[in-house]
Image (cartoon, rainbow, N blue to C red):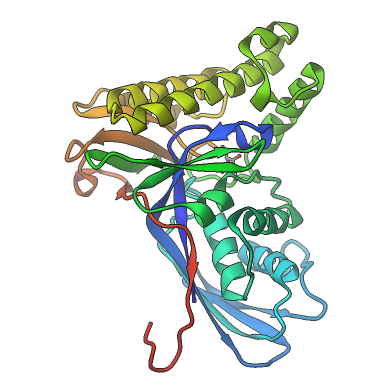
Length: 343
Ligand code: GLA
């Protein structure tokens, strides 16, 4: 039985695949995956998100054409192909992580499934395994989500340097409330301009001869047009991640909140990764008393906004749409379960 949390990224978006910095937290919404080995030559998977079960033969594993099984089944097959469990059985998945919201339902699914099937690796290797599974189904994402899901600690944000994969746990002050608000615009990474932005960042890095995560603001003069804007977002975002982490360490929530608000402006203007509903939601949240900062979170192009607020300033129960107050939580875990152990 494995449990893998969703994550919300406090700051540092579209920096992971550029070798930059990010500051995510794992949240107390999670995906639980229970695996009961039966010795059969196939895996029978069920999820509470879809009535139709999926059966995956173990030999040969994976490689299901789009449409042959639902997308979650293709992703499961890609994870199975990576983990290569020795025996089949039944897999039950249930999740409180909303899909298409920017809270990493997909990484929670991959990490939870990989762990339940027996994957045994330290967070960076497990995160890479999940990244390869996502890539196998056409989603060329970075390491942000599976690393946050695997390596987080309760009460802390995770400062990740994607150039070195150095991880640093930054305490989130007790008095900080993290509130996630859905914009109402659902999207998938695959169906968004994510790949186009990533390609622009790669072009900019090639022109500079260095990953954008290590570029300096002075380098930007060597670029022009949209490539310069995309690069400026990445370079300034990495600075803001450092500043926000330092502000959290000293308990300076207003300073951390200012970094988040600036990050949103940069993602809206330089990176063009927001939509009007998300911009309006951020502006609305920033105008509320007790809100230190708010920004889009994750891939963008819809999905959720994260706000850093005083405790009690935002009441999820009174919010007209989907809204969660989340607690910085532990990364993924696995335990044996069965008759007598309960669930
Ligand atoms: C998605 C991807 C991540 C990352 C973010 C943007 O969540 O899965 O790898 O690129 O978008 O920061």
